[in-house]
Amino acid sequence: MTNAEILSHIDHTILKPDAKWEDIAAICAEALQYHTASACIPPYWVAAAHKAFPALNICTVIGFPLGYQHFSVKAAETALAFAQGAREIDTVINVSSLKSGDDETVLHDLKQVRSACPDAVLKVIIETCFLTEEEKIRCCKLVTEAEADYIKTSTGFGTAGAQLEDIALFRQYIGAHVKMKAAGGIRTREQMEAFLSAGCDRIGCSAAKILFDKA
Image (cartoon, rainbow, N blue to C red; front, side, top):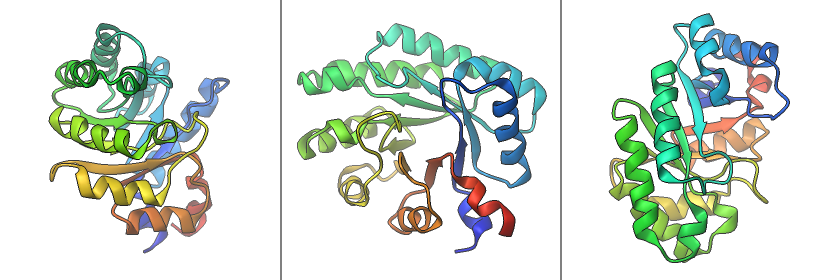
């Protein structure tokens, strides 16, 4: 797998709370130059990034990083992000409701976000580090039923990030239309290639620069 091939699957990400516009703009310019799948940036900066880089595929995060906002807030945030130019939405599942056994609320939450961005790529972050295997399996089924495009491992803000064993588990339980995104703690070329080889279609990371020189 060439560096360019790996980059084509990467959501080039900057979600640090102290990121300045200069940092956001640099990530966006790099995403265009090196043909990454998208640039994943904070929702506040979507409008400015779309204006400055109109050809860029912009991804942003919703209900980030904890996921327990009311579904109406998530839906409104999603609709605004889409209106401002984001074409990929990474929303955090309501982990609190899931762990309370309230799958109905989790599904309703996801369907509201899906309805708010019918023409966007929707990725659902389930934050695997907080879940049991049984809860991960339930997430696979809920993400599938909500008609999301991707299931995503992690925010990168939890206690652990992407694990290959979770990707293997996802493959058993997600629907045929659902793809997989690994994120959190992915910092080396070897890790990126391993997750892609395991079946991921996207990698979310801030370490794409290690591939730039030979791309």
